[in-house]
Length: 358
Image (cartoon, rainbow, N blue to C red):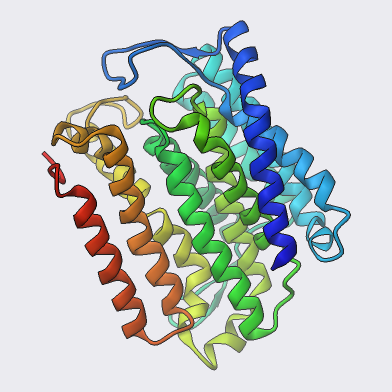
């Protein structure tokens, strides 16, 4: 655990220090978010925050590769995740600068997911009526689908200062706790890619947040939101490859389901926003990728909440789902319920001066 904490702190410190340099370069090269009718920010703001995250991640990997335990985590799978992350950041950089069309971005996301497949990172089974081993072609298709959906869920929620970074940090903490406790409880290898990737992921978000909270001095852009989505999805898919579902289900059904269910639980808010956005756009006869100003954070702002309170409300909503679900895998249901009730109470206190939704 100590080495993973060191990894998180190194990742956070590097991202914090690198981000101002990347901001200057983004401004110089024109990667700047101008003000549009649906935007919340009031001054042109640099993008390419994802570039700072990628640089911090790369240097972190080089440093921690020499640690006794964590160094073992950077194996074949971690290398594949890093390569796929590099592709997705390059794609995001191009979009942040030149505004790519939706189909081009989708093709790039599928290509990045395909790199994961080349490194053996794919779903092997599903907990349906027991455990079903997936044929390779079906497993690959489902893997690509999960990666693309997760990337776009994080991308959709990235519409306000500090929102995506905070939500993904909370999601990453919950997922790291699950992966680590699972290894401790059931004797899995603790030096695995899921623990390493999520520790780095949380560090990147923490290091980036001081530059991104309202009023943001830099946005993560698509380079950042797609990177965070890819890392979270990759960690979840990699974890399923370390789990023997038959062995776990003999003792408890919860941990068998959670490697696949937890990523969707911790990203419940972004996924709900994604589904609602697609639904209303299709209903209106528009493309699902057509931008609008009816996301959850837009509605909370319209209800009288400040940007800070809106972010805090959505942080707490994410924690209210993510942490109890994680606890449920290892503790009695009533502990998870009490945790959820406590987090709901805090959320209500935070939102009492504003309306939840308009």
